[in-house]
Length: 61
Image (cartoon, rainbow, N blue to C red; front, side):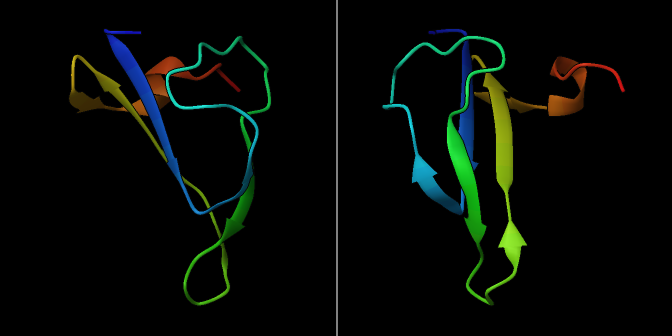
């Protein structure tokens, strides 16, 4: 939405479109590899355009 944005990099396959609203637990992508062939996921959350700590938005373990 206009307040929150999630961004991902190094995805092998993406299942949603930019701007699409997703629900909790919905699969958005499968993880791919970085330029060295190592599995990697880049994930960030932005609130009003500014990066925030995503740990604050993820379920507790």
